[in-house]
Image (cartoon, rainbow, N blue to C red):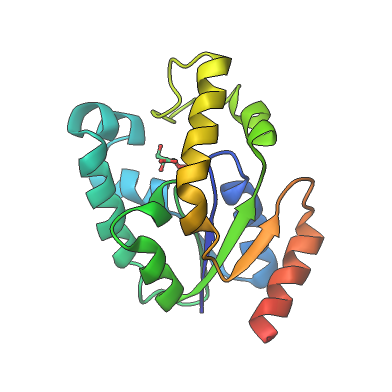
Length: 170
Ligand code: S3P
């Protein structure tokens, strides 16, 4: 069994994903970390030196390397579901879970964490708000095709675990 955690940057995919994996006794993989290790470059450097299109190709190729892992929870990047039919692929290869947050909560979480997030670097708060609103609007259609949509504001691990367990058991 594979679980894919999707959602916008700052939704808590990695933090909550790690906790959930440990409760489920699953392995945990963060797709961005996986890409960085394989490429020997940081995400920021990949964007800077190779450009976003190359990053999207690497993202999709690396994601597909994870088709055979078992009992593993994979948290993917905020853009992953929106390129190269990745969402379709994830739906076919595991349980997809969308951690859903509103624009203002995302902004308050992201304001102070543009670190290694090349899409947010050098943006003022107002530019960030415009960016998040526009991108979320575009990406919603992909995110919302997840099998499980979980409102992530104030989501506690216990509740997250309960909802996922229920979905797995059916
Ligand atoms: C991106 C999100 C990032 C990372 C890259 C692009 C995006 O991942 O993959 O900077 O397009 O939203 P996180 O959502 O884990 O920050």
